[in-house]
Image 1 (tube, rainbow, N blue to C red):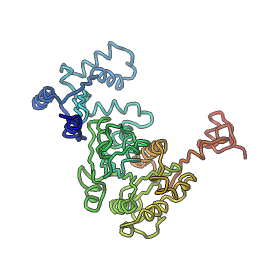
Image 2: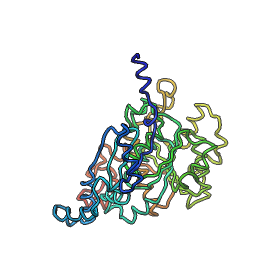
Image 3: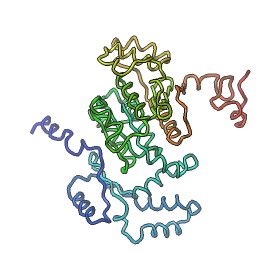
Image 4: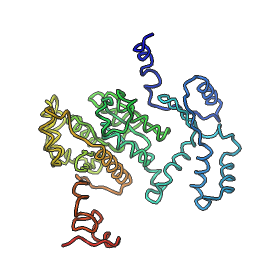
Length: 395
């Protein structure tokens, strides 16, 4: 057999196209039988078992004064296991795309420990409230950063993801993925990353993207209606169609633009008559944006975004000439993920109620002469600056 034939035989197929883990709880007879079958199947390439350490860390998190007291922690860890052999306790998560088998605490203990360092900023009660939410994400380039930051912080435990595109090499300037994932659908990549962070999540994927035939199911079907939408797609008609559905269903919408740190908040849950995109397009709806040319798409997106950075403005005429597409940077995408997650948390907890367009423009906030001891404006405000021992800006 030739090398090309050998390569073709090993090309992506079967398990490597999967995106949902298989969970086993060997304490139950049926799961133990399935678990044994997995172990002899040849599918497992790597076993990761730190279960004993996880139990100890859980006990320490529940009893902070005992941290460092090995004897007490060992006693409470043994009580937690209740005489069950460690390999039978908890859950084993098998990731078919990598062949990894990982031993973890059961769901509630896992999530309590994984989010324990959030406490002091997010209470356990707030964490439980957030855990009951489902977030929809349209567009998994910028949206990938948002989805992963949301899940990492424990903001929602159910996600609905839509993107028709596959990972290209040119995406790796901003999207956290590996070269082994080139050609894989972006929703599949995001779903795998989410499940590798928390195998107990609920993730639904729409690898064909959002379109007229599935948009209702995206908002209302599958695992349940979404509580918040993160809209990060490139197609103007879908941007408006998603907002039309969000407004009808009274779902808040967040959008980061990866330029000037701009974040849109549209509280259709509180303002069901609110104009789409703050009214910047007037009365134009999704039906008015069908079959646009490339130039019309660019023009529509620019109208939606409004004031853009000088560098992006200078790039627009070059698209299709000496630039292949919109310029985007990993730093902007990462900032956008942080902004979306922070605001989503406050929206879902009822701490932030206003709609609006907000900017966290790092070129303006962090520049020569704008530091806490310089003449510029501090993002902390004058009173906070004085508290920190800095000087207020010159009048």
